[in-house]
Image 1 (cartoon, rainbow, N blue to C red):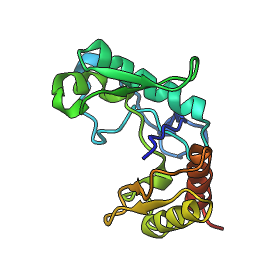
Image 2: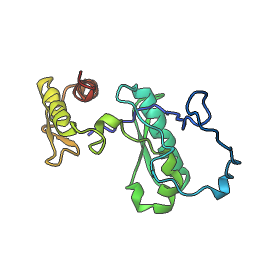
Image 3: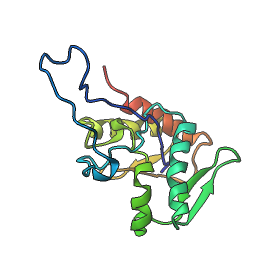
Length: 177
């Protein structure tokens, strides 16, 4: 299965202090120092968010930043791809190195919201459409029973299998109107 890394770092604001937000006066308190900040309720807060329509270059850049961090902290890695477009992957399961995984956790890209079963109520239908699309375009795959991924159905795959996988993912998971 191809590893996807999609980009889009989003910034958010609580909206506090904007004119017209409220008719109630408020008192500002000093910002907490970084050392006194409590743990975030969302363990994914601060991680880069991949976009469904992000380019391979964007995905690779975010993935490589995360895996380079793991490598810098003792996790073996390997590279794949052509010069200038190499992907770096952990050569072992990063969770086998909990200290390294923890240090690099904020660099690990989140998959696109559309491909997260917890955030997309239509995930199962979209996943089945993704599998159907790839097979219809000659990339023979079989979806896993839990819809968590897929395996190649044969060793004889088209040369443009990465393009088929990407275009079908975009088509299947794109927001329906």
